[in-house]
Image (cartoon, rainbow, N blue to C red; front, side, top):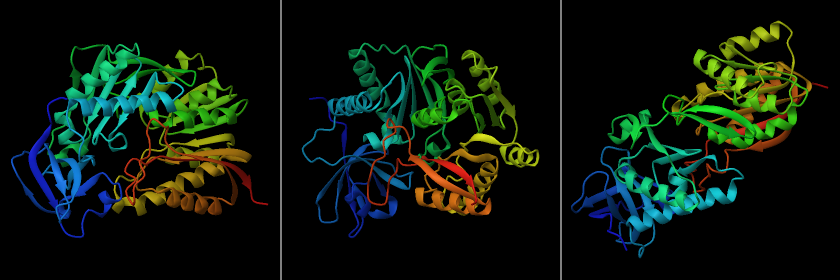
Length: 408
């Protein structure tokens, strides 16, 4: 048994509060706590009791955050020590090996969904990228990463370097500064990966998030079957991922659109890496302006893919976001040839599956199109969705594929 990481602190819930964690949730908010007592500091693990003294579990406490406690364990008898952390990391890796056909590039730790709240670790071949978003887990980050390196080594995977991308603004809500840099020795930060038969050069230092959007892996693979011999338009292409999956599947012609000059340059380089630059091209353009222009020019595509950034990151901005999703889906549908296909998604937690479906239905009505749903998908299984009552904190990606037909 290792040294306990539990402090002498205790937090007591108000009577009638804690409904979410009692239903399996991961967070306790500031207004749910009656008292805190004992010797501890922000970021420490404290015991959590219900108002009547009933043991609720252990969690990280942070007085700077509205999420006052992030739950770590519910088990009364379970020691919270370095062995506990090793077992959590081991379970996360064993899960990925079970549900993923290819773990060469995947998410190994996904915060609350792996019961390691606030921590993200992505693996790109022999490089790890870590993002720490909560004070408590930040204190244990090095211990967790040491365990992960040892666990991967047991499977013959030797990690040559770790880079930290804790530069997300949400850290400020935890009273933490933004940070990025090497953990341990420096190494070249552009990493070669292969996904679904497509080769990419991932920039873990300056790329978005941790360098690459691993969550769309299975969805990118799903569109391959639609694209052989087809004319494809990929909107918000970023580094060309959907466009290149269309190209590798044998699309006749693929155009990718993105407003970022750097993203378009990276996408073009990825096309060249895969010897697809004769059929897959990229254009720097604002998608919201380009779609109407293409429609006015009479352009039609067999497959249109819409993978926009999150139009809302807060509940308050959802109404405005709905208008944005409705607009791009309406414009996208108008460019689909009768009987062609539309792949469309939202990566916003607050744009629920039901709301997105309603928005797409309204867009189809306005565009005078009939939709046949081919399939509905979510994020790749290395980004598991933790089910709780009213707080599916890890569920954010919704992905539809439709056949689009002119009205009868």
